[in-house]
Image 1 (cartoon, rainbow, N blue to C red):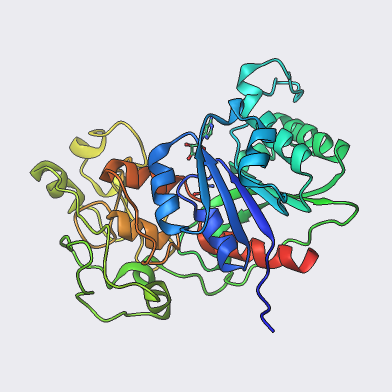
Image 2 (cartoon, rainbow, N blue to C red):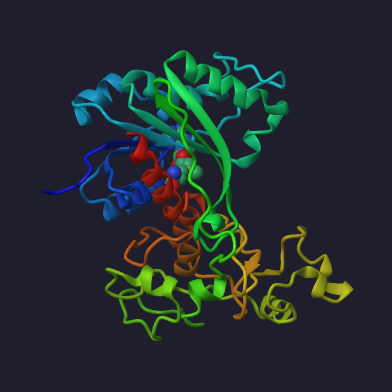
Length: 348
Ligand SMILES: C[S@@+](CC[C@H](N)C(=O)[O-])C[C@H]1O[C@@H](n2cnc3c(N)ncnc32)[C@H](O)[C@@H]1O
């Protein structure tokens, strides 16, 4: 008999669906993704063909309508990362503050559907903002609607993602159980940038073309599973000046390697940083062009960034290149989503 799990998921602020992909890999069914950004939903739909998408500002979504239209039999899990800006210095939430609307939408959705569990992800400093008062207010609000809430800051590279990305994860379980967070699996054997992307070459590859090199690591072989070729590997053409400056920075180095005359040429300290080939990458951003390939004199391509975020190669990003970088940089690493999903299934 099939052991396929049919736990149904509603993904709010779903983006291109990094978190959804991880949950799908863990055996969940992604029923619906909601986001205000059509580009992200276009990619979401192309890669989650059995899921529905709904494009709307979540502060205006009517969950009765969503329920009738897409989710008549309810959902088992709600996930998402609402921006939490509407908290005052005291850590109290002002329900009338318009900045609160997005977090309120998440709370409302959980209250409406009463799923067995929710996962809320956010920036790591949410845990410590206002001496933890914001976090405590959020916990109390979910407790008041019946959830037992557990939270932790997780480092993606501890779980096999080749990236030192930290996220604050809050998990609520309907009823009395505390969520048992997964234990790190890769504390001593982190996946490095080289292990993640050394099979992707210096120059652009036409979408769908064959891999120019054999895979060079187990991680690369795993990322290639189910992929018909290379997509989203179009390199950025930098100015000659940029190329000549970044060529002075060694593997793993930064602006400190530059002569004094060049140090202040970009106004931020993270500029002119090269990934370290032997370590996980820094946090993948939304395309700021400050972090360079560990070996080539260019920023990573969308595909290289996606690999560092643990997106498999069969997951193809659509719309403009700028939009693709933003979609990748916004995402929760799928491997982190998978690990959380696998752990959650033990509770459900
Ligand atoms: C951090 S990203 C989500 C990433 C996603 N969880 C993933 O793993 O790929 C946040 C998303 O919230 C969406 N968003 C921001 N404001 C919104 C709003 N008012 N209504 C709906 N979605 C919104 C953005 O378009 C963005 O895609």
